[in-house]
Image (cartoon, rainbow, N blue to C red):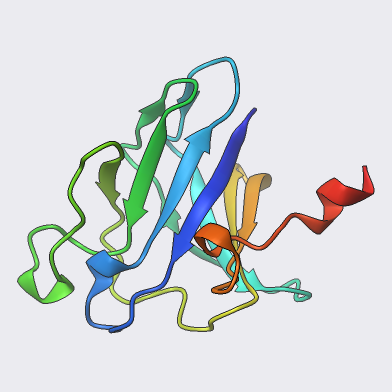
Length: 139
């Protein structure tokens, strides 16, 4: 499966949940269905992870397509205005609080039945906020 985190953005204001998001991209050759997948959050070097929730109903990413997963709720004015759906569509997670509050070193993992599918580490100084994959360089 070719799914990867291409952007991780933390909100400047913890109340503005629609200003925090991740963008996933399907780099594979087949459509990718996120229904029933979960996303966990943890810290680099720690085995402790928290499940943010299950993606339901989910969405399908066609090869080369991207989706922006926003933390908040589009109907809650206090969560802020979501970004326009110009090239990338929005999918809302309806979470009650930001998950990137831990800052740099926060690791997000897309999981299916507890098994990791894709992983991204937040680094505010890296392009798109995604730390380079250190394991990829070892291969």
